[in-house]
Amino acid sequence: MRVDGRVITSPLHAVVPERVRIAVDDARQTRASWRTIVFHKPRGVVTTRHDPEGRTTIYDVLGKAGEGLVAAGRLDLASSGLLVLSNDTQLANWITDPRNAIPRVYVVTVRGEVTAELPGVVVRKRSTRETHLVVELRQGRNREIRNLFESIGHEVTRLKRVSFGGLELGRLEPGEWRDLTRSQIRAAFPASSTLPSIGR
Image (cartoon, rainbow, N blue to C red; front, side, top):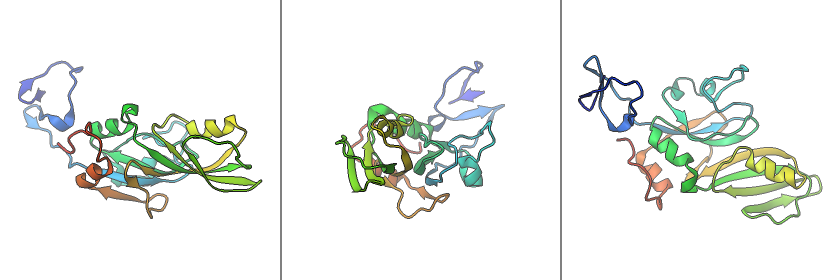
């Protein structure tokens, strides 16, 4: 194998596929065109390529549209909403890096009336039966919102991510997706000096 013309014999040699030319047996490997999408993940679908329990995955839903793409972060089985997928691994890693503190906004419904004041949480509607809220996080820890409300005695019954940085779910229905351009990605994270070069 050659990387940028240099012979590499170690299988452990690290490369960034988007930034180098790779040739195997002197045949240059063609690089897929840069592609990034916003996907509305439905509830009951797992954010993984293969599920040992046989549950439906995001790649089952996406079909050919998901080939070569990796998910930038996750949404748990019971959650729905905006998920970014890309074949640009640097971009996907940058999006999920907690140091970049990209805001994520969720619409949440919980059982019972939430009366506690919680940072980053806005109550839209409440009754003794349930409360509807908007929650903003700066990093996506596993089950963070569910654990937050469970700790104050409220079960989350519905959780949907509606935005990620400047990317909006918009009118996408569950299971639908739309392609993004490089300029849309740059516009979604305008104040981010560490955003990697896109599509190179």
